[in-house]
Length: 514
Image 1: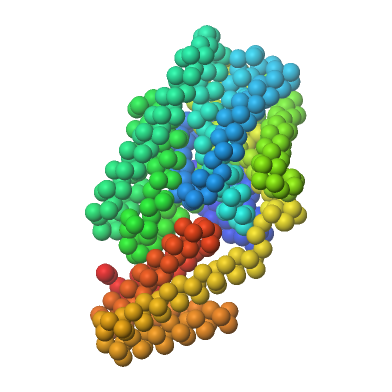
Image 2: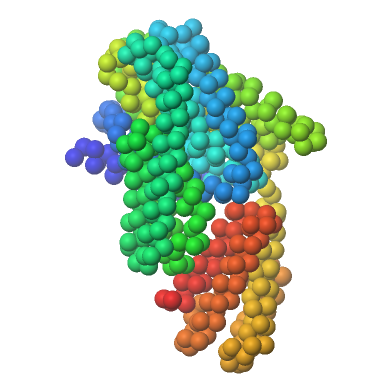
């Protein structure tokens, strides 16, 4: 009963915090962590201890799935090389650096220090995606940051298993076995994710019930995670792969009405889960501090470990960015690598790993690793979370509001012209009554005029004549085809495509059932 009350309290707290975050123009996850820490120190608030199964099995899959669906395949293909370097090399370097600092500053033995390094080695996709939603980053920069956080977990998970084997179970490291395990982790995750995505695609293609579609969409990430774990693969990788694959097929899977419903449902689920997990991170820190009787210098240790992660990330990102820019014949700049370096927040995935450290580990060492992990997560979410948007503005990396608005209007204008062209073809073939075509032509010409004059594009969404609704659906289909062509040709960004697709979906839904 106490856990239910805690969850309800976190949801209420998150709703209030989100309202204030919008007014203050600060990221809600960062503000929620601060609110959780403040609430955790109050005497009437009970001590919070999170179960690892709650984080890894209940919270992570839908959040990772939603983040994967938001990652455009076109932009992912453009950044796969730097993502691979960061997901492998940077994770290894970060783990080694944190382990060295932990050995020098904390009472942790080498094995447990390596466990701490493996836990904190990768950036967190949930935190990075939540922080990045508010930023108007260029598509490639957004894809780089998001894809790195999504695909570096397999590397950190392998390091974590090796570290636990050495530091807790006192096992020996076999490089051949380690390479095999890495292959199983990645291969099992890829296979399970692809299979579940294929199965979900086939089922959803033959389903038109909004309730069933919603249930299938919600079950898919859990099926991918459990299926991969059953194959001894990476459940995180499987969920991400399923999300990316299904995200590329979103326009083919469902009708406009179902897409709107799924968007609303997933928006609610993501808000609730992010609220609970980020609030729990903040609430858990005071209890961990009270339970740890030794290591009074933990704040200094946590700050230095967080600084180590930032320095190592800077040392990798800047040379990598410079090498890429020189290869393209461009003079290296500091703005983009500065933003990418600073967008390395830790969050839910490191917390889940720290919570899963076996109880066979010495209790004091396990508690200290969990405390330092939670403290570093709070530091990165608060410091980097609150300062990332000002850094984006200072560097000028973010897309100007005028640019986003201009791209949006340009795409809307070309879509409306595509609709008019389809009307002309219908008129030539005499496929519909001329008076209906004239009425629609006047409506679409008025829309073009409103777009050109930068006025609100108020779309008519109802008609008593079935033929009128059918023609409007055809026009919307023509605009949808043009929207997909513009995106595939690289003329508009994924952000603009999604905004306009929602407008078309709303208009399509207003016409009633197909």
